[in-house]
Image (tube, rainbow, N blue to C red; front, side, top):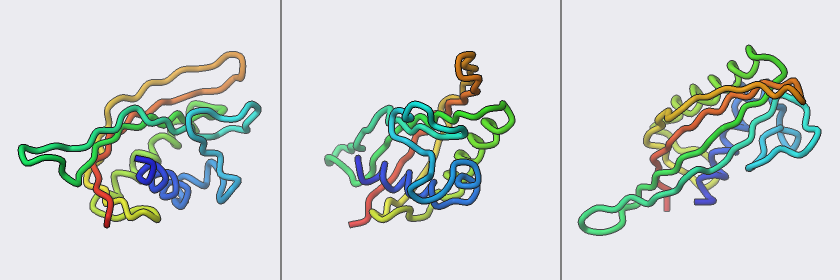
Length: 139
């Protein structure tokens, strides 16, 4: 859901552990799906992988499950690892709280996958972290 994605990115952009790497406010280098050409590193690209409402025998519940990939890109392997680890730890620490303007209640965060690569053309390191979230939206 769009509301949860907005809450997720707003929350990450409010955390010093993240903004110390990507900047703050409108200058924060966090982008949906693709970074603009020539973006300075480090930056984060957030891509939704899946979104599934939760159903029970009695029908749809108010719980939702969404998976996102966070592509962290930096000029060296230490910074890309520090940034991706910060995303994971900040979001795990938010479990049990309400995040963002839409009051997404974050119930769980699960790490699905971590992979890394190096782009020779841009001399950048990339670490992709896939996380799955269970949440409800406050009414």
